[in-house]
Image (cartoon, rainbow, N blue to C red; front, side, top):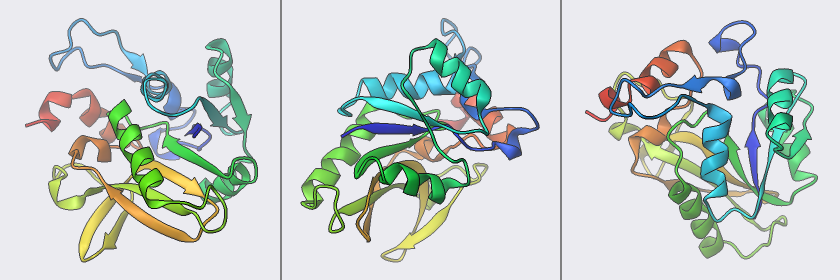
Length: 208
């Protein structure tokens, strides 16, 4: 299954002219003195490459010209979407790929095992092969394990428990959807605002 890294959003909450995929994460102050700051897109690509995903491409749009230019310089395979919103872009991608792993470009604490786990869960629960009977999977984290200073992007309820969507999903054409719950609070931190970036760069505080 191919992974598609979504990097075509407007990033409006980060400030004018900023494209979140190109933001550099600096962990030198939290026990990672030897690490060189890395761009979000590169962190995500590294983890996708080390996962079970059968290749990847980066979905960009007219909203992210600098991201497109950078990705070309890194020889990442690109696909331009209309850039008219998250759901509209997913429909555009589904017309070309009947099933794929959808990975937001702003998940700073993504790991290969997260991707492997959701792929395995999909394979175990689905036999539709990407058609209308397939089951889509929404990656989530329980809201009650997330640090109180982290503002979740999207909260939904399943079986009486509040879950936070993490931006890692299996997308298909099917109408059925199941959540896959990760017990990793860091996975729920998406970089949407300057405050989110501060939290990610202070990784040591998050782990307390």
